Structures are given as C-alpha cells and as structure tokens.
Image 1 (cartoon, rainbow, N blue to C red):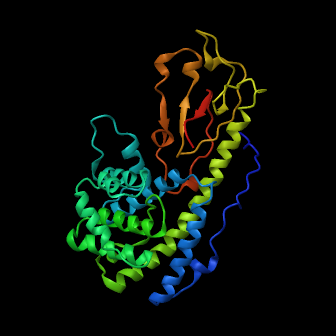
Image 2 (cartoon, helix red, strand yellow; image 1 turned 45 degrees about the vertical axis):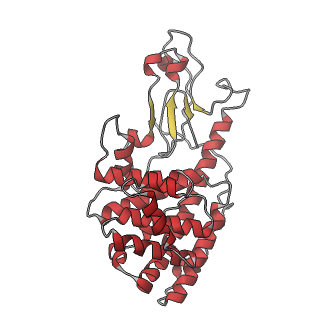
Image 3 (tube, helix red, strand yellow; image 1 turned 90 degrees about the horizontal axis):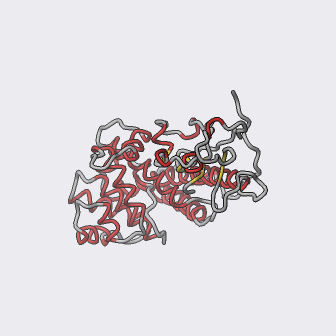
Length: 330
C-alpha cells in the first residue's frame, strides 16, 4: 500500500544560500583561509538569525555530529544513530557508556546560554574556575580566540578532547555574540589537528570552520523546511471544520473519537496521513480517546522506534499509523 505525500506550499528559498566560492576555493595561506572562514561564519550568523530555523533542534543535531567526531577521535566506531539510541533508550539507573556519555556532554553544553556555570554543568569533571581560566586564554578575533582556548585546554589536559572542543566552540560563540554554543569545530577538525599549535592550529581551525559552517547552513535549511512541513500538516487538522479538531492539539492523522469501551483500531474511516521526523516527539493519543489509561505512556522519539542512519536524507519520512498522533514539540 502506498500513500501520496500531502502537497504543501513551503518556500525553501527563504534562507540565504552559502555562496559556492566559499567552499569551492582552494587556498593555502592563513590569510586566504581566514577570509573564507570569516565569510562562512558571517553567512551562518545571518542564517541563525532567521526565525524559520528551529534553533534548539539545530544545536542538538550539531551536538550529535560533534559527539560522533569525538567518539571517532577516541578510536570507537559508534555512529550518530547509535549515539542517539544510547541516550534515548536509557532507563532510570542505566549508564550510557563512554560513547553515550560523550553525546550527553555535548547535549548539555548546547542546552543553556553560554556561561561558566552552564559549561561547568556539562563538563562536571572540571572546576568552574578552571573553565573560566581556559576561556580567558582566548583573545583577539573569533577564530583566533577559539584556537587559543583549544590549545590552552589540551596543553594542560591532553586527553580532554571533548572539553577542549566544547570550550573552543564556547569561545567562538562568545566572540560572535551567539547566546548558545554552536558545535562547529569538532566535525571539521581531524585527530591530528588537535596536536598542532600556534599558526598551524589556527589554520586547521579556519579550514574546519569553512566546511562545518557550510554544513550547518545546509542543515538549517533542511530543518526549516521540515519544520514548516510539519506545521502545515498540523494546521490542516486544527481547522474547526475538521471532525478531528481539538483545541490546542496538532492532529496529523486519525479517526473520530471513540466512545468509552470502543475499539479505536476498528474505526471504519481512517485518514492515512502521517508526517514523521526523527527529531520530533510523536504521542499516541488513541489510548486517551478510548479511555485506556494503560496505554498512555506510549511516548517515544522516533529514534527509539528505529535505528536511523547518520544521513537523514535516506531515512523514512512517512509512516503509516492508525491512531491519532500529535506532535509534542517542534
């Protein structure tokens, strides 16, 4: 059985596109690479200011990419989907393991505005005073500040790759006037780059930011498009004329409300429409409509339902369902 995709008019060109010359140019000198990284960061700064971009979701996705890179630096092979599952499938009292803990550290680092206290919450192995000292080591232009912080942390704690990269991104965010840490450096740097110093490290950081900023812009556009699609579908079922209308609910698909004791699964009319995204919560409300309280705790992220590959473009983006679904958040 196949289902036609709903047609919605969603403008995907509202976000400015990264100029091709920023990523296609082949330059070698520090000055030239610094110019390209400045152009890439400026463009990303404009994109991050667009209301269409789901900021918290973007930061969490970039945190996942950064965690995957840090896990690879340590010699482990866990991919993004496995890291996501390691966090979402945790039960009370469970330990996430080394790879899962890396992802949780990055998630905590991007959750709250940049501040020593918030960074200390994410990097609990280090004292807030030490974190403040490392951040103070960054002076000058934004990328130079990030490189100096990265070098300062790794000089005193050579094995603290995660902390060094998080604080370097924090220094970059502070220099650019961003409220939150935006993970960029980890995904663009190589393992060998972390052992460089001085101008060599600055050059590596500039190169890394050219590629990672371009990827962040691409991801922002993709998430903005998908968020707009989900909102459009949800609003379709929020119309007061629709039989499934419920004030305050974003109904994507379902059937008329079942009376007490009725079997919702046997309702004769089904609307086969569900737009599913691995980054959004889906809630099964059929139990509530049927007054079956035993089934209410069926709330999962799609990452718990299926192990997704790192490339979201190859994931399933439509799932058949027979119950009323609503989105918890966008």
